[in-house]
Image (cartoon, rainbow, N blue to C red; front, side, top):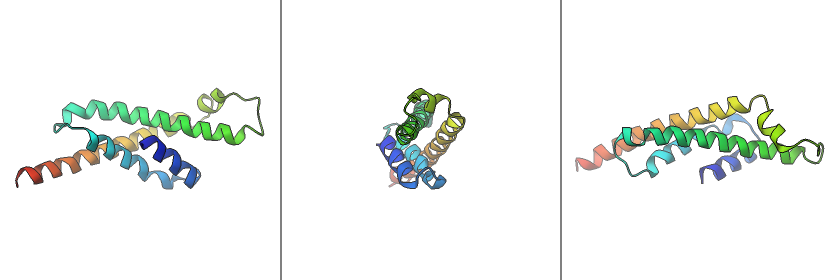
Length: 120
């Protein structure tokens, strides 16, 4: 669901940075979906899922670039757009980092929720 939302937002905003709040929502969703109530139990999963989400999002963005450029340059393989794109690694890192920050925000929100409803 997160990958579909990020791909849809990237296509809607055409690669502009207005889609950046979406990784925050993805990070929050990664934390909220998990059934743990201790941070140390799912912090490693948050890191792995954030990195995987960043790589998958960059993969789909490279796919979009490939499909757009396919009629003009049919001789370039898809690997060129994914690995030789100069900013691909940086964009993957940024998306993963923002998703991680969203996950940390989700940890705070989940902690407040647990503390509030345990005291009732």
